[in-house]
Amino acid sequence: MRQGHTPFGYRITEGKAVICREEAEQIRKAYTCYLSGLSLRNVAKETGLAMKHASIKRLLQNRHYLGDDYYPAVIDRETFDAAEAERKRRSAALGRDDLPKKEICARAPLTRFRMANTDQVCSDPFEQAQHIYSLIESEV
Image (cartoon, rainbow, N blue to C red):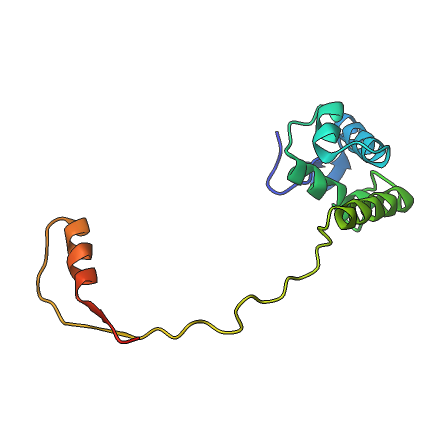
């Protein structure tokens, strides 16, 4: 059973992250399939992972698989970097270069309104909301 936020491919045993061999093989196969040209959706199918394309993308970008102070390495740096370069290449080719978009509106539109006071209380919350909204008077 998966524990908390433990990444796919690992299990926590006696307070330490250990590699789950079967899942680690699926991870390695995912990198291989992606680098061979398969789409993210087809990587999921080929590896038997019941994930959508966005989840496979996050899996391929998970730096824990390189190994760190807590998680042992599942893949090597060369494979990780190659997959990231391929992702960026595909993204740019599709016009999805992940660059921040220019702000559409530099500032929020001016909105001002006033509202008359009310002492009316309705038993139905929808009627109460309708009554309150009817008291709004726009000034713009």
